[in-house]
Image (cartoon, rainbow, N blue to C red; front, side, top):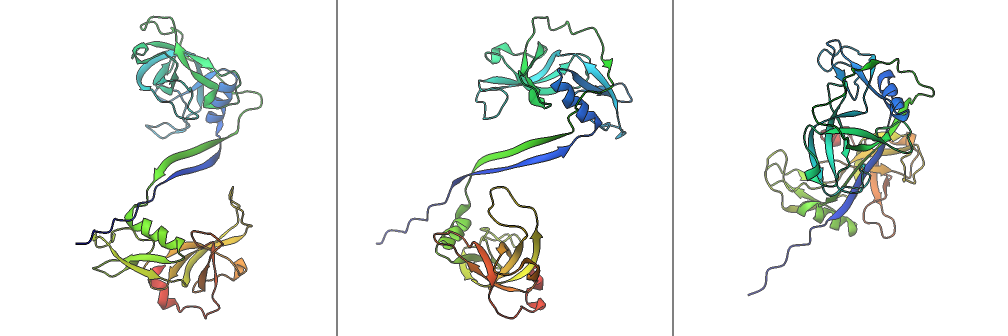
Length: 324
């Protein structure tokens, strides 16, 4: 009796997805963030008298534009909370803290931020807190370093209501850059592990659906149309046909490619699904639908660096129209 072959190791790798999100600010958000820089907390009053902090530019109920700014207090009441025992990088505090929703004095809605307390036993709904301002402020929500407990009974909020504010400051904040980042461990699964391992051997391996016989590249482990597992591996390509493409004119960070360049969907010979890749070896304005291309590998590369023209005649439209 022979021993059964062990299945190939499924790949795993850390993956970080991040990008800077840049946006301009309207008059309400500009006033709110500039106010934070100046140590002033602003909200906006809706037509029914509700004071919203953080402010919105449109009423969430009526969708009407709202512009009536008011100044609220730097103290408030915790409406609900959750304990964070393991802070992540770039969170407000590097020691365990509570996430809290705080209804600032004069506001009717709550603001989400961190509360600096020694442990969960020190937090309760209804407790009074106050803003701890950051030492250096630039016009961002991080200008509030965190909240901290205030020595006052829970039933003694400030008596003064919100005061009208014209929202005018010197050198107002007009735009922000927010860093969006997601860290996780990615596992491609059985089918894509085989696909990635095949690329390391300069082969492109897909999987065929046993019902509709479409060959998926990259493979998904199951046919999304028939709902049947795919296990029959099929080597496709290496050449293929450009089905659609776009010209990239904006240079991406950490990508050493001169613009403009072309990114295309490529239907490899024998595949029932187009994959994407960069087109090189030809001026960007000469790339076209139907262009026949082949992969170009770099020394030690685990996947094609780009695709270049094969020199063959262009494919007839009917040969790839179902793959567009």
